[in-house]
Length: 138
Image (tube, rainbow, N blue to C red; front, side):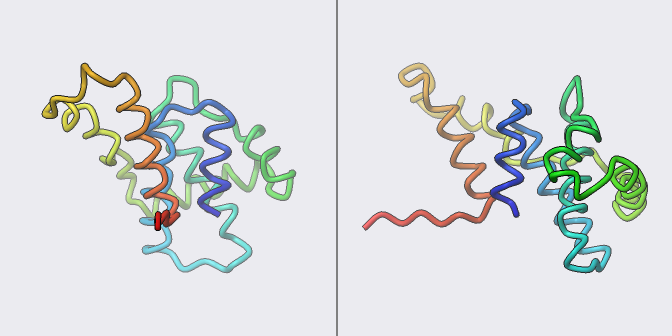
C-alpha cells in the first residue's frame, strides 16, 4: 500500500513533504480509528488528499485521487472520510516529518557544496524509510 502511495505522489509531481506527511496522517488515523480491511485504500487516499492540502499550493483533487483508485472510491466517499479523518486527528494537521530537517542537517556537513545530488538522494532514502522497504547489500 505504501509503495503505491509513493508512486501516486511521485506520478503527480507532489512536493517532497507530501508523502511523509500522508504517512504521518495515515498512521495517526489508524491508531485512533479501527477500520475494516476494505477501508484501507480509502484511508490512504484521504491521507494523501489532506497532506497535499497542507503541503502544496495546489492540492490533489478528489477526482484525480478517485481516478488513481480506478474509481473504486468515489469523490463523495473521499470528501465524507476527509471529515472523519480530521475529527479523529482532532484537526491537528500541522505535523513535522523528516523532510523538514533535511536542509538543516545537511548544512551541518561539509558535503553540501561538493555534491549537488546529496539532497535528492537523502530525500529518496527518507522516502524508502517511510515505505518500510528494506535494502541490504551483501
